[in-house]
Image (cartoon, rainbow, N blue to C red; front, side, top):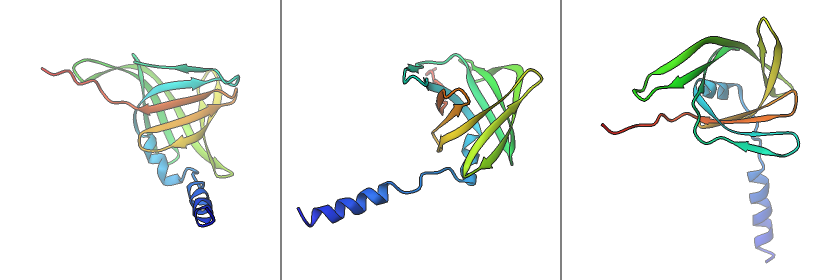
Length: 140
């Protein structure tokens, strides 16, 4: 047991390493995303199964946009004309997406980001979790 304890402590410290988001990770935001779940401040969770609309995000530098898309069975996308422009800023090693349109302004803090998922938390404390969109492939 005395030999195992130091090994477990080292393993614990190693696994608790820095998991913050790096600026180079922001490129992962580019592409198609679907919402997987929403966690509310009271701890309740709403899970999403199949989504009829997805988000397309395009980021270049610190400016980007987000657009709602509806995947079609033929592999194409039906899109709305609405676009939400945003800017990314870094404050205290935290990346924030700041949206502004003619009606309102809001921001979301990037909590987690990798190649297959990301999550943001808004000013009301609601956490949105997204997963990379995988189109449904129907055999012909």
